[in-house]
Image 1 (cartoon, rainbow, N blue to C red):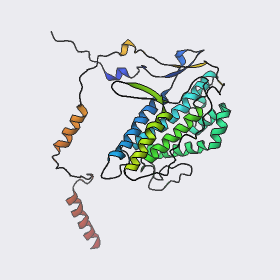
Image 2 (cartoon, rainbow, N blue to C red):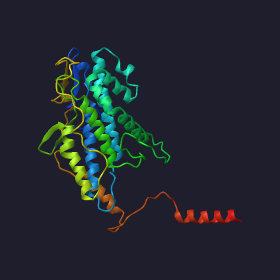
Image 3 (tube, rainbow, N blue to C red):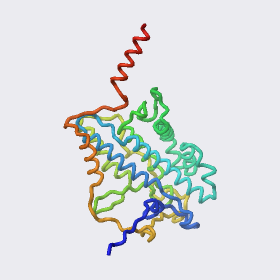
Amino acid sequence: MKQKVNLRNLEGFRTNKYLIPYLSLQRYGPEKAIEMSYTLYAIHAFYSTMEDIKDLEQQSTFVNNGRRSNVSIALWFLALESFVNCIGKIVCLRNSQDFTKDWSGKSIARRLGFLLDTFPVEGEVLRKSGVIARVNEFLQFRNEIFHDRNVGDDIVFHKTNFSSRPYFNNQVDVFQALVIFIEICCGLRYVINGLDIMPEISIGNHDLLIFDKLDKLYNSFLKPFFIEALAKHNLTTTLDLNIDDYFQPSQYSNIYFGMGEILPVFQYQQNSDYTHPLSQEKTTIGAALYAEVIAAYGKPPGHYDSMHFIIDWPKMYGDAQNERKNNIL
């Protein structure tokens, strides 16, 4: 008898909350918990950045600016905005304010300013550091990439090392975005009494799963990886990669929230509705298909192609020559 196959649509797994972190206000319980979505965006950004550095490290024919640099920058901005919003949401929930009505439509600098007013000790130091100006330039840089409005004019950034032509960015811009995010996270990591809300990054292999703080993994992995990849090709950068001097308040120093008033909530066991038997076969489907696509072109080793925007080059050339002659006559 043929075994019945349990077919399910992938769309049905979108709402699986397995291992998703939340912040829960004790008096409301998990029903009104706030998603810590920033930590998931930071994980995606971390691995995207790693691939950008790898592009530079492994290139031997030209300086590879990172095939995902635009994506990495966007993800670090998304993580930054989500981090600011997460804290803002929990503050509003605690004070019976409407975050959606009062703050969600304001600029990220205004939302960050709301937090700096709420936590005056952290706020005073962060304001004096000039980080709001850096966040504003980050926003401008990100918007130029997202909305593609630049027509070739250079943009002058005074407080950051972002590219004057945002479309033409590379790993330096990725790291500029990253260190701005880390600076904000360092300054606000202890605003919830008893918690360290610095993003947790998942690392490991097929045998291990480890979580550690973004700032620690930046110093132990991302920064040295970038520096060594630059050095390999006799390259350097003027961007200050040091984060050790960023302001960080002491643990338990902020008592705006009572101890235990806000707790992290995780779903460590997967709901049975989302269990699905996955194949245990080890495959390389994508790699094999990619190799087949390349081989089908039948190009010899060493072939370097160009982009194909012109439909018929001889026709275009001939028609252009004839039009030029007619204009002369």
